Image (cartoon, rainbow, N blue to C red; front, side, top):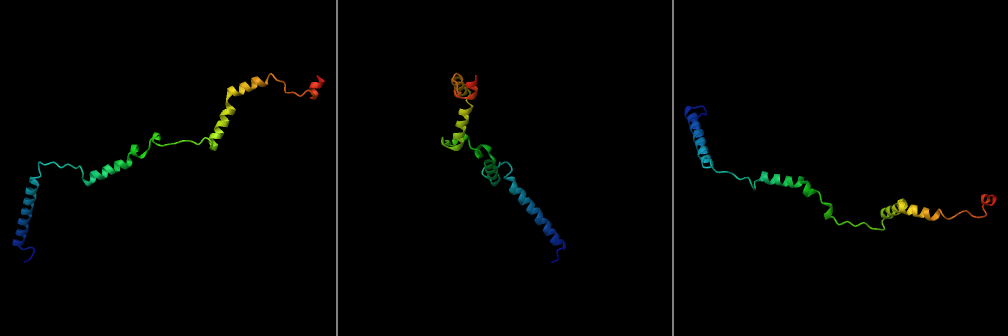
Length: 114
C-alpha cells in the first residue's frame, strides 16, 4: 500500500473530514456556555503579581510602628542643648539681669585712672 494510492488518499481525506466533524460536534455543546476564569492559573498569577506590586501592602504606615526615642541618646541631648542655647527668651532674660551689674574689677587700670 503506497501513500499516493487513490484509496489511501481517499481514506485520509475521509478521516480528516470525520475528525473535523467530530471536533465541531464536540465544540457545539460548548457553544453557549461561558467560562469563568476565576481560579485559573493566569488569574491566580495576576492576583499574586498584584499583591507583590501593591504599594499599600508593601509600605507600612508609620502609625503601625512602635517608636520611642531614648532621651539620653546623643542626638537628643545635643538637640536639647542647642534648643537651650538658641532660646531667645532665655538669652534676653540673662542679658537683662547682667546688664545692670558692673563686672569690672575696681583695681583695673582704666577704672583707677578714670
